[in-house]
Image 1 (tube, rainbow, N blue to C red):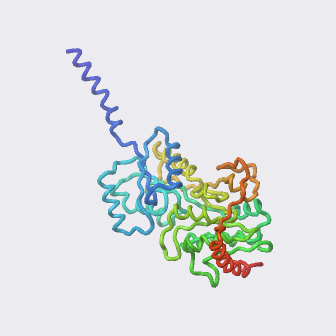
Image 2: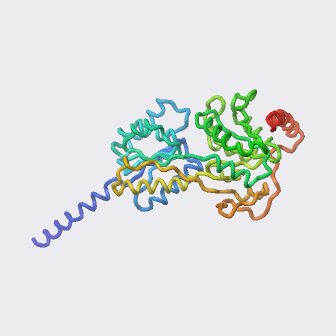
Length: 362
């Protein structure tokens, strides 16, 4: 009898442990992509490292900008059948945050949402999302432009690459303002957004621009998520164009395209954003009130590509983090085909861009 009593008491003592093990210990990470990319992998790695043993990560890839309401309703129905009650939801990008706001109460009722990889949302959006906080991306263009002229003081032209989105237009305006101290020594142009050349960019035209930037010029990639017709541009497509057509030092705002030949710059790192998101999640799990957690902007890091530095003869400052280090200085690759037909086509394309560059020469 005594032995049975001890056994029953032991089982009762174990019940709380079973309850804990059976409860959800997941953090759901929603991506604004249809499939994994270099950025999403880096982001997920940072989040996983930051959370450690606190929670497991369940990642969902929602889709691209061209998906309509029916597509997202389908994704919602699929998640409705498989979702669990997570500890928190982390959103990566605009689509993911919009999805969480629209379907969150049905999928993850009363669960805290941490938004990432987007500019600071409008106040009315934040006020309507009671359980939201996040890490807004706020690029300061003046330090980025200053860095360009610090690393390449001989620069005579800055070629800005941007799409026609609201964010793209804001970034072009910010770069124009940041260039004012340098306008006596250099010019700034935005192919596809200039008078007489205002139809926007597509991948073919972008490739022509990248491979035709003249000497003593640099390219500043401000973001290119859609072409002139509004079609979404996949990261893989953009990476291919950068890798095969870049002929000048190209500065970027995040590390999604590192390894494609871009120089880098003052950028947002996917891994660092993931780690910062993990710190927010931990604070939430400790009981901190999400409504009192003001969004904290992500800070940029100076990250440069060693092989690109060697290719363009650029010396990195001491404070820079160097990735893809070059063992030896390789000869600069020619971004334009060297066969006769390729040269002919390239020269025709360059001629048009030559007049564009001369047109805005100070």
